[in-house]
Image (cartoon, one colour):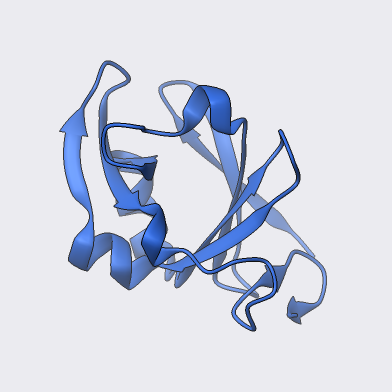
Amino acid sequence: MRLQNIMAMGKVIGQYSEKNKTFYKKVQKSKHFCWKYHAWGIDILAMEQLLRLGCERVQVTETDNQKVTVAAMNDYKKYGVINNLGSGHQVFLNETHFKGSDDSRQVTMFDGEA
């Protein structure tokens, strides 16, 4: 399966799978989690690109502990908070909108729906 790199501020922030319509983001929670909103953020320009590509899901893998959670892109649009906290404008979605790795919405990069 071919993954497309998604860039923000000159860096790859994750990969998008057209087949699974999922954006895969690997992050270190201690460094990348937004404690102000208890949320995961996506660069606003990257999010606009993902929406144009037809992205339906965001899957976050925490590299600290390998925890995997998934949220609907529609939740980012509906409940997301836009702010610039020093790393450019991002859309932050509270972690309560993410489902855990045992949820049926989890998507793997290789098999489609898990």
